[in-house]
Length: 286
Image (cartoon, rainbow, N blue to C red):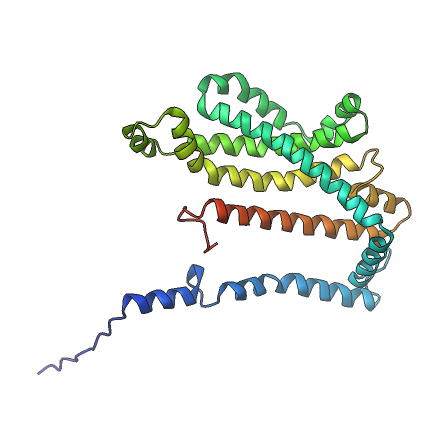
């Protein structure tokens, strides 16, 4: 005679399962959002600590790579003298103006090409050819056009920013599901309302991805632009420090570029969460 074992089954209420899932967080991990943020800082902090230890013990030459404490002391000194805030402000202003101009042009062209095959035939090939040209190859011609003043720097930033936004705007508009347009047409929405209420919101995730790429490209273009004939800015600060072998100042500018890049990307992510709160892949969970 075989023995039959009876197994009791416990049914977890949906509310309890939801609370358990919330505690586990995204990706099925039991670590909450604050814990994940703390973990993300472990590697950078350890890197700085190892860097400091190597420099203090003489394994890193100050002329090659100064200690983080020396870089911080240099930052304080330049801040108190007013040099660092001035140069940082100049670079931020150049980046902001270039981003606004290039982003506006990229968005306008991307929208036009996204909606019109005729515009694509007339514009896209030329844009792609210009996009393939490296910044350094264009630099001599840009200097001939604009000299080494503010125009040259803003132009290069605008040029670098325009392409990621153009490509992602075009792609976002083209990828909007045509089935989403049917309810609007049934309700009698005009073409302008369809674009404003359906197409552009549907393309927004791709457009904001382009903005994040453009933010990184803006600083890359600005670094290239500020190495030529600049009288102020972070690039000028770094090039001036190179002449006097001030590696602490050079490292400081690199760190500032990194911090600005992380800050700009964080702002872009916050913008995504705010503008795409309705989207299932975005919002508070990200």
